[in-house]
Image 1 (spheres, helix red, strand yellow):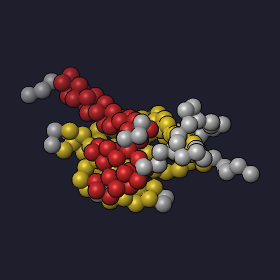
Image 2 (cartoon, helix red, strand yellow):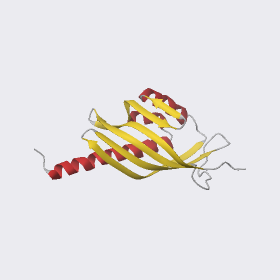
Image 3 (tube, one colour):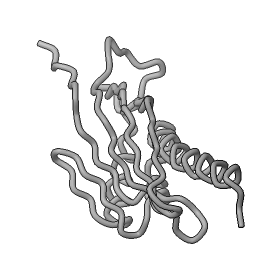
Image 4 (cartoon, one colour):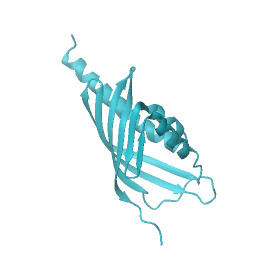
Amino acid sequence: MTSHGDHALDVIVAERACERLLYEYARRIDRGDAADVAELFTDDAVWLADDIDMRGREAIRKAFNGRQAVTRRQSRHVITNVLVDLTSSDEAQAVAYLVNYRHDSTTGTAEHPAPADHPKLVGEYHLEFRHVDGAWRIASLRFDLAFLRSRPG
């Protein structure tokens, strides 16, 4: 039998593992390893936004392979206000804010540093996580857009 303290520690460890998945997701995209993002998801994962509907790890992999090929883009996915709630020993839910800075160079290669007056977009990630084969994975990710940078001119 585990003590109450052991249970509390298990919850903290699980919540932190889920939070770390979200940060790793952002890092892989921003450092040019977007094709590896799919490994963070379950086989039957869903990734949804207004104009995006990816179902299954392979669909996610295909989409992020395309993103990795966009070498003109410099981006930073700033993830904040992450709140993870364990709903069972093998499932969790989370909400997090995304502030995305993005610039597409006209030269075909990302600029360092890239110009940016303000973020490209701001929104919320709504996530579900599942503990599978000894590791936490993203089972669903839905992005809701809150703010979008206006186009110049």
